[in-house]
Image 1 (cartoon, rainbow, N blue to C red):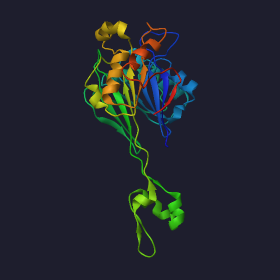
Image 2: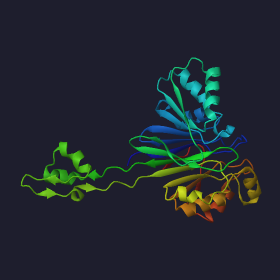
Image 3: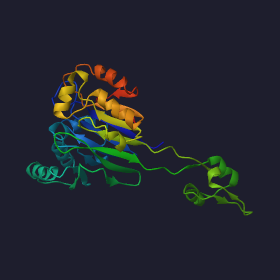
Image 4: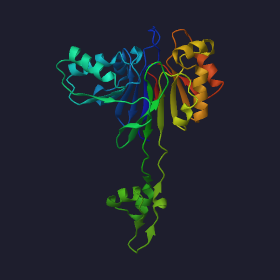
Amino acid sequence: METFRLHILGCGSALPTLHHYPTAQVVDCRGKLFMIDCGEGAQLQMRRAGLSFNKLGHIFISHLHGDHCFGLIGMLSTFCLLGRTSCMHVYGEPALGPLLRSMLNAFCSNMSYDVEFHPVDTTKQCIIYEDRSLTVETIPLNHRMPCCGYLFREKPLLPHIRRDMIECYDIPVSQIQNIKNGQGYELPDGTVVPHERLVVPASAPRSYAFVSDTKYLPSLAARIEGVTTLYHETTYGDDNQLMAEKYHHSTARQAAQVARDAKVGKLLMGHYSSRYDDENILLCQAREVFPDAILTYELDIIDL
């Protein structure tokens, strides 16, 4: 199966602690790296995780609170010091564009590579990136400022041709791609071996939804229905539900309700408030609603 995995670089919230780094993640899709949010220390965590700076080409920022973007300019500066030449693509709400350009002008005046900014409409769900393997679309959220999540969808794979059928019918290499694309194979006597007999169906496409800072949104479930893996912020427990409402965050129980209603495969928890020395209290509350919930920690690697 092709690589599709998640690296957790930081899973804390706004207040720095000795336990957690601010939010930053990297999705590895078939060797291409995509960063989601870039809190302080993201570049150090990339080094600790053994992730190649050169393979990172796209950075998606959910919103302009510092714990989600303060690491961006430092990392871009480091890439310049290392002599990067390939373009870096940065996605975020329109206000990030002039801020990013101002910081680049101030701190990275002799850039060795281009930084291309892509403004994102955080109020709409639409595809903002696509290649042969993957699409990335926005997920509108409700925070104290413009904010969106990101949904990574793997494109359907072609079926796998059966090696025993290749040997049985002496199928030439030149016909293998045609068979994968849906054709049968015609034998010398004119008999056609049907496509379905020659292949094994590919694995179902996988998907990953990153839900950044947001108040509880019951309507969110319909936007992410059936995703393989959901990361949903779980800043607070039941004891701080009023704080969650005041600051437009979610409790662990509310995140689990979204996961349950969306019928996702598993729920990843993160963005923990510094109030909690032990996040297991959040895990217990989430699992009361959605059993397939797990806590995330720095340098976790999760197959999606």
